[in-house]
Figure (tube, helix red, strand yellow):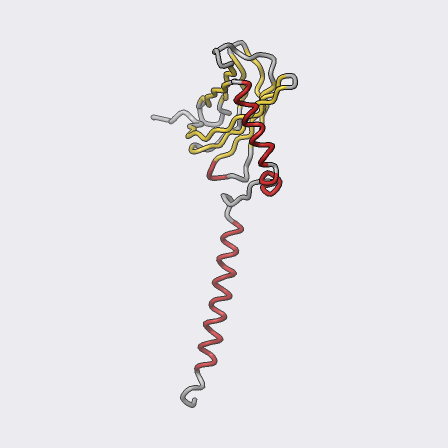
Length: 163
């Protein structure tokens, strides 16, 4: 081979390596289970004024929502309990509470539930199978009033086995 005839092959090889590397990166970025996009993110951005109006309405209502996720033995669904109170601490009854919950590590796996009213508040079982950071999005409806609440918490879904 003459000197200098190898350069086109080196350049073509570098370009091919770049294309293959880019395709591998795209594959790993899109096949990862923890990758997700906020549903309807564009519509939510356009509805920013409505969200701010809802935040003001939440403040006017003065309701407070406190909740816990009680861990259970492996294989069972954790219990979510919620208490809805007024600013004076009086319980709010006859409300419908729905929740969307997802682990921060698996945003694409959203759990939804409606909490049933009990003697001590509201509750339901949630099929949560992952310890870690979770986001909870509550919507409370009572008559014409709508109250929303969001929270992120570190949750233990299972009682540790100490055997």
